[in-house]
Length: 360
Figure 1 (cartoon, rainbow, N blue to C red):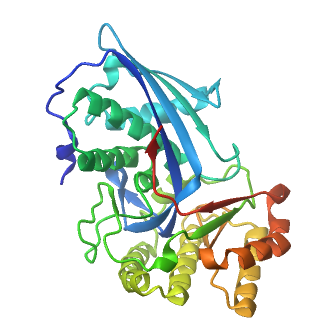
Figure 2: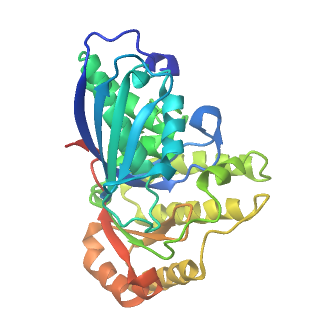
Figure 3: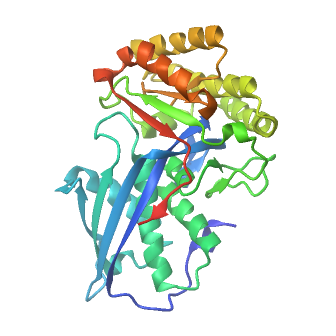
């Protein structure tokens, strides 16, 4: 498919007003995407676990205008209160998506959104938020064109979500999602995420993710700026090549359930992501001292207990502790006994792998 396949020719029905609600989860990348080209195209492919508990619920109430507006018409509410400072980001998103959603200026939208995780908890909400918003808009388009089939609906929702936040395209479905063209993955594409198409060992089902909230403050460098710093990065090409190779290695690891090799790739990917930040120009560091304390504690405990927990990191200081469900009790006790002390106000979130977004 190409992006032109997502431009509708016409709509078969009219819709004067209505309301739609979607709940969409966040996700945690195992192979990281860092660096992007024009139009939110990733510089390298990525793969992620879709989460379950960490989610955004978005409701769009829409009413058709008497005449098509010159600009986008919408009100935005977060947790029931107007959220003016977020409107420019939504406006940018709507501008990017208008060629594919030509009805946007024909309606006034009231967008109401809330997160299941605490505001300013340090959990990135762009993936869950933009995927929930995209799904609501594509649901409206499906009402304007009822013949849209379910497979195309998911592809277009992922495609549209990507235009708001790259990682959001991986939150439409679950439980293991891949985004970005990769020679060893059938049907992989830069345009939208796909469900991982190969065999996955049962050990990876119901995988656990405990998110340790090390630092709940705003990042000093945004992810968007960090992605842009990869354009002239001295190690960019080597990094992109590494991501492709790690995805190829994961095919056998997922099939065989080889947790030791899985741990090596996941932790290496997390550290490489932050190494790219520390070696860009200007350079920056998002890990905090407590991030490093947690990592070292995990390594020590894994060696002594022979369990299979590992860590991964997003573009921030918080630590995602990943482990199989069969080791949940022992790992959870370790987290409570030794890791919570390194969390801001002792806060953490217990999550697990989920099935993707759903209409409410």
